[in-house]
Amino acid sequence: MLLAENLAAVQSRIAAACGRSGRDPAEVTLLAVSKNHPAEAVAEAVGLGLTAFGENRVQEAKAKIPLSPSRARWHFIGHLQSNKARDAAALFGTIESVDSLALAEELQKQAEKQAKTLKVLLEVNVSGESSKFGWVPDLLLESLGAVNALPRLELHGLMTIAPYATDAEKVRPVFRRLRELRDRCADHLGAPLPVLSMGMSGDLEVAIEEGSTIVRVGTALFGPRPKVVRGTAEE
Image 1 (cartoon, one colour):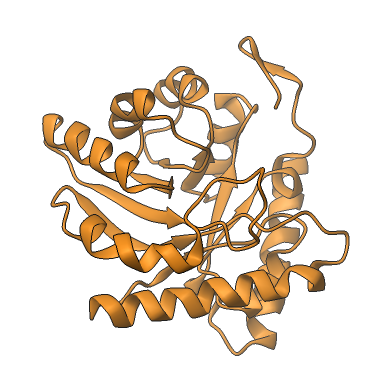
Image 2 (spheres, rainbow, N blue to C red):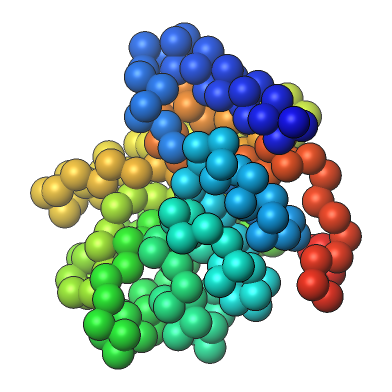
């Protein structure tokens, strides 16, 4: 029952944040981050009505996804190396962490070989942290048209990982800048980019208030991550 209680608490937080910002909770997708949790946890979450799950390692996903309910829909949210693009294209319906034109082109090639279309988000390093991947905001517009022209990729929006902060208000400017950048990108393309993936367990309220449409929640749902799952060490 712990997962059910945690899910209810997270959904209540989402609803309250939407209420404060005049939004419909249905506009916000709860992406359950199942990293380092077994397929049994995914099955339990699906039984509670969750359908969107996030993984950040291709190898772990290769072991877990075939054992998970078919209703689950999978998003890749970690740093993706080009040599893992083939497997990622096969396993995931959405790649949230496309952080370069070269990676986008490799995903296009692999999706073409697999005769499938991938939904993608472009990861932006809004905070400028050297430890994070992603486009530099000012350079994103230069690559936008080239990514959007790749026929096997559907560009849906942007993603960012905010710096860790004990006070979520300190990262509000990061989320605001991503929303403003998304609006500039949409104007540049002349087409909507409806998805903003931003906010995690500790700062989802602020992210929602700033326009997030996907919050990536792991610990607040599943509890602390086990250190090892099927031989994969925790990052």
